Amino acid sequence: MRRSALLLLLLASLVPALAQALTLKIATIAPDGTRWMQEMRAGAKEIAKRTEGRVKLKFYPGGVMGNDKSVLKKIRLGQLHGGALTGGSLARVYPDMQIYSLPMEFSSLDEVDAVRREIDPLLRKGMERHGFVILGLAEGGFAYLMSSTPIASIEDLKRHKVWVPDDDLLSYALFRKMGVQPVSLPLADVYTSLQTGLIDTVGATPVGAIAFQWHTRLKAVTDQPLMYLIGALVVDKKRFRRIRPADRKVVMEVMDGIFRRLDAANRKDNAAALDALRQRGFAFVRPTPQEVARWKQLAEAAIAEEEGVAVSREMHRRLKRLLAEYRGRHAADTQAAK
Figure 1: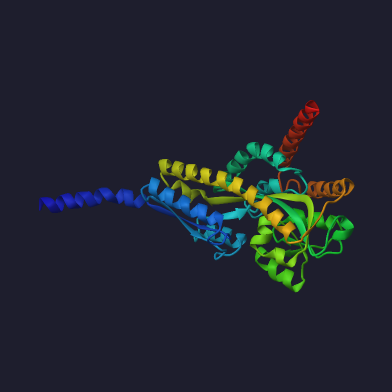
Figure 2: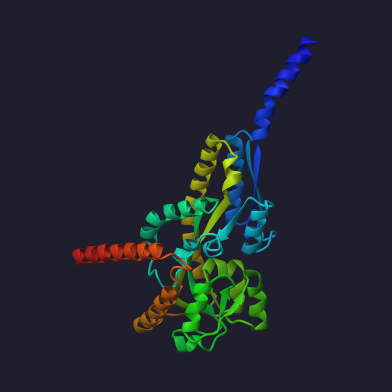
């Protein structure tokens, strides 16, 4: 009798611990076996180990849960708890998430690094106000125009059929200002559309173009950064708050380490992918400084029209201030070195 009573007490003591166990179901378009998924699965194992099984991450890779729009809907319905999504897609939740992908804003990765130190924390706070916790922000890299024939000017561009993502209002507005009628399509339809000739030009990172096999249908790169892309791993705030504080800290620590590694790896991978495109025989065309100035002027006009809607005035002005400060310091350092 005494042994039965002790057993019941032991089982009762385990109930609270078992009740705290929680699984985060997370979707991503990244195929299984990629560096991203390898890091995520390794992180999930570490989190499960350090929380003694109280927190588990279950991933749905390869886009099996649909595009970003579908993933966000499933998160709202509680069918998923998070996703690895682009900044542009998350703009549906919090417009300033696309601050980095404003067209023609950045000229170098050094500028990006200087700006991200201040803006990344603001994006985390903004997403939390809108019901999401950012577990990590990862560099996608610079997107370049890649096309069937070289594009060095707006006049060249007008002869092409240009794809824009179906949620990228700013790029759509920019191309319209250039006199181009872009073709708006979801990511999943791009390869087929390149095959059929519906489009012959995309804006993509080198790694993305190769990963999705778009490069097999293209022949030229416009060697001018079009925009900087970033991805975020986000989870529903209410779901995340069900994890006890000490375990939430573990999740954030593990993910911070993973995303630091991913940032560095993505940068190296994009450089290697550019080299691979050169070796494949891609033509690399650099627009003249005067032509780049034309593009930037039109981009500024497109952003001004969407400011306050596609991105907040406050965040856009902060970005411009940080860039001006960095460029001022860089110019002074360059002059001092001469």
